[in-house]
Image (cartoon, rainbow over all chains, first blue to last red):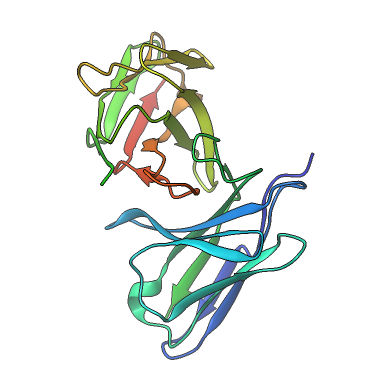
Length: 114
Length: 113
């Protein structure tokens, strides 16, 4: 059974640009969550999508946005990139989004801003 | 809201030593509790979980017991291996519905041969 797939694995951008990251959940999983991981702030929740609807949102500026498609694949977009956006972005999926279910994580996209 | 406090690392051990990573939480009610592990260059993997008070989760020689009296979920392993070198995260789910895990700060463990 294929795991959660995130593309690309690595990305280098410059300030002011925008970027789109992709996440394909495990087959049958309808909930997709995104997290940002940095050495200083640790793991922070960005947002969660379930059945194409954003259900939860973390405390990030509006430059961070996402969407989910009918096949449960999800994308997140960051506009007007800042140096502080350099991080590992992790996607996680679960079957129904029940809060007691464990999430399955991808290996992440490492974004570097120059 | 929910919060998790986890002991800071790094923790450096010799092979076959005993490992304990402390985790305490603040939450409404009795949520499930999770330990995740992140190996170098990888995403997080679920290590073990406990779904109710007094439950003991176990996997790969690791154990953690859900203690509601002390609101703790400490991770232990009796004899660590070099391959256990990783970052360990304690986590709990949100108060409301949805997958919004709250993580502790992570504890880096380095096991030396």
